[in-house]
Length: 183
Image (cartoon, rainbow, N blue to C red; front, side, top):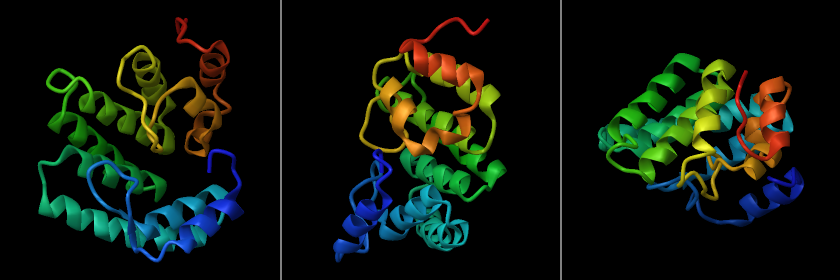
């Protein structure tokens, strides 16, 4: 997916006989989520919505099973964001941050804010996403292998950050390689 070789990504996903894979933090990842993200990245909105709706149902159930699990709220928030359900996405992202704040968990609390930054980016709120990204780039613990990982390389190459690509503030941040003053 980072190389945007969607045919190879699809082949890898479909090669697995499993309906749940290991990708999301804390919980099994429905194969439908990966197929939905692949369709979304390709620009196939109809297929993406169908697959992501299936994943959403599974992730909503996971949140009901463990309502105080921050990661489950964060994962659900991302799916809502990818589906364009802005209010629900932000609500879940903020709930994840509330349940696992950086002040109480320096590593996973930071990751919850990485999720929130991506949620803000995906729902079109660059004014909240960019300052958070800038702060997180200076904060240890923002690196992971998943969509929400936050490094300059992630920002440069992951398709998930595309909604910010044409924002001059994002372009400056990525081009500089390090966070700069926003003024």
